[in-house]
Every structure is written in structure tokens, then in C-alpha cells.
Image 1 (cartoon, rainbow, N blue to C red):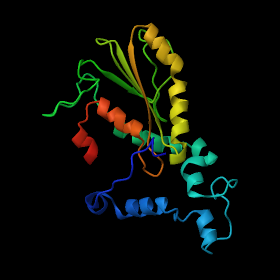
Image 2 (image 1 turned 135 degrees about the horizontal axis):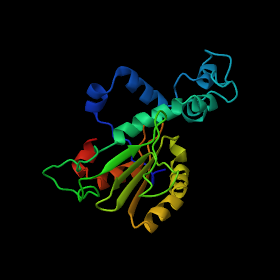
Image 3 (image 1 turned 180 degrees about the vertical axis):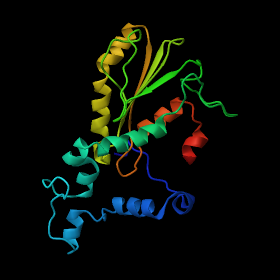
Amino acid sequence: MRDFCIPLALKWRTLIHDWSPALLKFYLNAFQMTLPDQSNLVRWGKGTEKTCYICGKAVGTAQHLLVGCRVLLDSGQYSRRHDRVLEIIRFVREGTRAIKSNIKPYSILKAASDWTIMMDTYEKQYKIPEDICASASRPDIFLYSRLLKRVVMIELTVPWETNIPKDHAINVNKYYELTNELTRNRFVVDLYAVEVGARGITAKSLYNLLKDLGLSRITLIHS
């Protein structure tokens, strides 16, 4: 886990001024495993049934409710949470360059101004232009520049933290064929499989993505 995730480094300013009381309460309870889920309520003598009240099949632990409930998955609840995280990562408008600053970090975006971004969400899907690649695959974010002949693909997962290494490998392999096809079409391809844990722990993969997109080290430290 330590090799894949960024250690928690919360600042008092963030806890006191930036977070709502409800968010802070959830965050602290989530990492102390003291959320009022069915399993804990029974353990505390405040409930009689450990089974998940939504699916009625598995034990209703925090892990099950946050990432493992089939009913929540099928109803799109996990997908909508995933899409809200994805919107935060969405970093540049169509036809614009990366944000400029006095500090000039490296950015894979800065050499072109014709970037087009497409995002796959629960409510709306896209199709890769056929002149770029004839494929039905849809990474969460597909960004391309015809001038540069370059494609940036981002696949986001919001897993339980212990599953981050496994999910990272799955998503890298998932787009192996698409990457090869784009390469055969003479595009330079950057594939980023990134993870944000269901309890808020951020994987190093997200840090690496934002750094390559041009965020300065100072911005990353304070974000």
C-alpha cells in the first residue's frame, strides 16, 4: 500500500475551514472503522442484523457499502460518485492550452492548442473519432491533439484502498489493445490509470498524472 498511495497529510486549515462538519465526521469515522454501518451497530449493541439493508446478502460493513454492494453498483450510485471525481480531474477546455503560471513545470499539453477532451460518464458516453482509431473502447477521459498526433487516456477507479494495486494493473491491461492500435495509427499515447480511494486516500498515480499535466510541485503539495 505504501508503494502505491500518498500518506495522509491533513492540515488544520483544511479540517477547520474547508471541510463541512459532516464531511469531517465521515472521514474520521471511516478511517477509525467506526461508521454506523450494520456490522458496527450490532457490535455496539444498537442493532440486531448485520446483513446489508440494501442488498440483504452480504455483511453490511463500511467496505461493502462503499465499494461492494451489488444493488448500489447496478443502480449507478458508484458510477455517479466516480463521475463526480472525474469532473474534478477534467483539467482543460477544448481548444485551450494548459494553465500558465510563473513557474513553468513540464506539461504534456503545452505543445498544442487544439486539444479536444471527451469524457465517459454514467449519463453520457462518447465515441472515439474514426480517423483517430476505429475502436469501441472508451477510457474515462480521452484527450487528443491532431496537430501533435498525441492522445492522453485516463482511466479512474474509486476502490477500497487495499485494492488499488490490483485495480491499477487491471486498468493498464484493459487498454493494451487500444494503445497498440493508436500507436499503429502513428499517435503518441499516454495512458494513466489513476485511483482515488473510496475513503479519500489518493494513489500516487493521480499525483503523477497531475504533475505530467503541468501542475507545479507547490500546487500539488497544497492541493
